Picture (tube, helix red, strand yellow):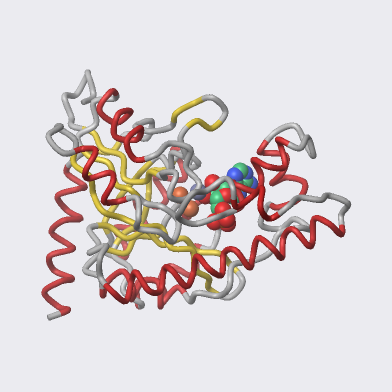
Length: 284
Ligand code: AMP
Ligand code: ZN
Ligand code: FE
Ligand code: FE
């Protein structure tokens, strides 16, 4: 709760150890309760396996877990992350497609390891895969191994020098079209929301996302400065989209837990829930 306004707060973008977050679901729940949050959406990259353990950990507490996902998709050559809220995480087509995407993620890491080798950096696949017990592997896991092996000093440097989106050792995800990602979420009864658009800089694509069934924009995000959020609030209004927000917490990044740092009220959860109901109605 915000001490000044009495507003009940939530975080709608949180990763667990089922993707590249550091905290297992139990710790996510513990931190959220400590911060006094009313709800947290579990939004792992291409994985829904962390949802049930989170719900179990939050049972008999005041915390509500919103089942979510963050799907890595593309439009032309731009990587677009689509969040899905109130998804039916057991829906067969969703589970099957996400499993396929995760298998492709391993292939993609192998590609990056090959590129790193060409740049004189030798990292073993086993070491990267050892960073996850289950769930989806990603660049953060690779970055952690690179820091452990003293290739560079910090996680940020691994992205700046080697594996950032436009850097020499980056390999793209196998293509998942943004329209398919949106459809997958809607067919699972969830609300598709554009994640952190301020980090992608392709606002001209937004009308196409809307045409494909997008229903919200993540206006508030750790990497959005206030002016950026204002601009996306205006765009949300223009296209009749819900305004959402979340921290994109990955556990302890730079010794700081981002959870709850982006102020979002519980009213947004109610709106997302209503929207999910509508999507389910049209699906019938
Ligand atoms: P992946 O899904 O494997 O492409 O990894 C995406 C994740 O890598 C994001 O969720 C971020 O946590 C992290 N990431 C991407 N770009 C950067 C960057 N430039 N600096 C730090 N972390 C980044
Ligand atoms: Zn991540
Ligand atoms: Fe993302
Ligand atoms: Fe994220």
